[in-house]
Image (tube, rainbow, N blue to C red; front, side, top):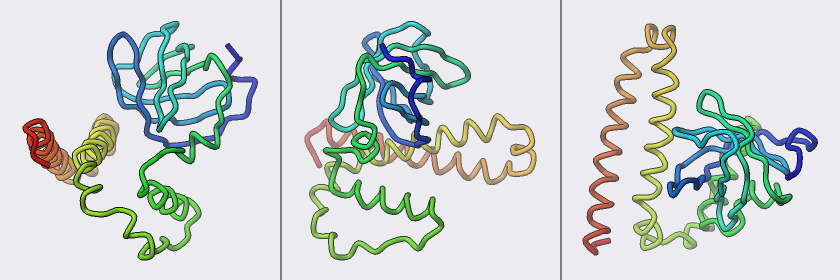
Amino acid sequence: MENLRGHSRTNTMLSAAIEFGGMTRDVFVRNLSVAGAMIEGRALPAQGQSVVLHRSDYSIQATVMWRAEGRCGLSFTQLVPVDDLIRRRGAPAHQGRVDAIQQALRENRAIPSFDESEALVGAAAIGRRLADEIGYALRLIEAANETLGNDPEVLSRHGVVLQQIDEVEQLLRKIEERLTSERAQGRH
């Protein structure tokens, strides 16, 4: 295993999944180097545990080097192509648009228009991915709500807004459950 600290890291906010102990958990990759990553999520594995980090069509073997407060550091068993992981090689057609929008927001630029590429993502493709996308949005809102709700100052100043976020979280959960149920019954 390479030493994670010996390589330059790129700060990120990438969705991924981590597999360990027969379970898979959704995580965010918060920083990334060719030799390791810092991930954030719930119920993370213990220090020393072997894991597999999944992002797009990559499955990366790693070991947990440390764990603290909803984050842990991974050391990969082999070097990985950081640029490919960030670009999500093999990602759905719409992911390029999402990445471009995020980049524009980070750079304080106008959000680009994608009218010319709308044909790439038809209603059928959206229908197949809708439950997954809503589930992802739900996990983002859950994480944000949990973080903000655990800050006493934010809670006292923005309690009503946090309740509204919680209502959105509950609505998304109901939609996700309905879509998942319909998909399990063979209706798309």
